[in-house]
Length: 254
Length: 254
DNA sequence: CCTTGACCCTGACGTAACGTCAGGGTCTAC
DNA sequence: GTAGACCCTGACGTTACGTCAGGGTCAAGG
Image (tube, rainbow over all chains, first blue to last red):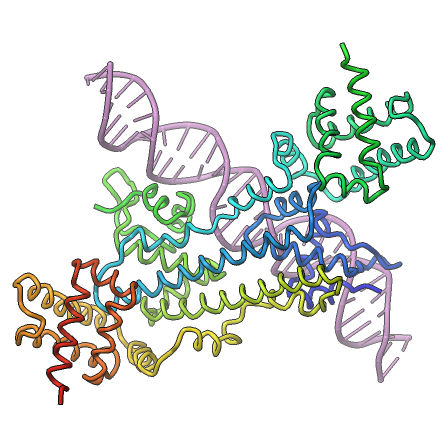
């Protein structure tokens, strides 16, 4: 069950080395490994690979791709729609290039010179950075995001493994508290909140305690966050929100 | 006379460093240097740069570009035609990618899985030969074009110099007539038209007199032609059109 | 005439996204 | 049971620039 690197490589028209590379930087880690350590790619991995390749075709850097796809609000469907628009824009740019070629041929044919500005106009049209802005707007760009981007850019696969384990521990803490029926303002829950804050500050961006409450607001105010968090356990977003708000209130009340 | 790196960079939407790089690897050396050592790019350099950028957009490596452009038989015109074909191929590839995105969105919507092979088909290496037929169809390759391509393939640098001078003479003829206030159906103008026809037939493709009118239609019907011709002198396209139409009418009226 | 800021020069090292071995297990297939 | 096709993990090489550093050039303004 699942495909080996070679099979995926052939299927997706990329090199084996490329898949190794994507794995090593944590962009696309196969969901399984065989007993002997072979990478085994499942259906979801292929979907993710397709996304990566679309972004790559559109001129995104691998770190940008990882960042965009790692955003909490990232949504496969939305991404596809964005990619569709971007691909359409890219074809428009190519059409303009073709017109520029025509103009050049035509100019030669009749010995007239093409205006220099027109000569290069199509080259300036397609700017992935423009879309990055859109992607950020869609999935959340802030100063914190910038800092996070800077810091996460250097993370290796092992770093991510560690971070994800850490995040899972935090999430598990919330869930345990929920299931135990702990109140959001109980000391047990406050401990989890503090771990949460530390893990964010350590791994992503400096988060002053006072602002943790704002982040918590987002978990319930923004559907995308809510959906994502509640995927783990329904009601988790609300619980996390309550816990953090209570903690902030207790800590910074006066 | 000539532009500095910064100016060219802005114009062509590339970085100054890129121009330095192209110079250092001998891909695009500015034809002049100012007294103080500044790179000065002339018109021909800009044309070459445009070519380089087209090739680059098409995925060629800089060494390949240098090799192709350094070949003894290399011809600007021929290259433009090749680039046109390849750009068309590339748009076809992008179209297929858009279809793949649509399929993915569609699949998500109705909960169907897309076949893995289809998922990555558009990423298949961009192979010009594969799409050549389709590209030609899109482009509307005519017999005249084929003949032109065949004939121009053998032209040398000197041939082109001669041809361009000839074209310029024709253009000058029209302009002189325009400025002198000659009517499009005057004998003086008819002489220019006949030169025009001969120069096309000699250098590019057999153009039966009757069809010259159709070509003339294009000069005013197709914005690209109009713009290009009028760059030399506003109203020239219309004047050439009228002259040729009058000539065809007079010659083939009955 | 002199300064200032925008621009240019030439090294030279840094980086991204892989390509390309090297050295060594794994897996079917006859 | 061994050949041949694949897989693994380093690790160094390559392409096409990005990014300083250290130092001239030039038009405008005080």
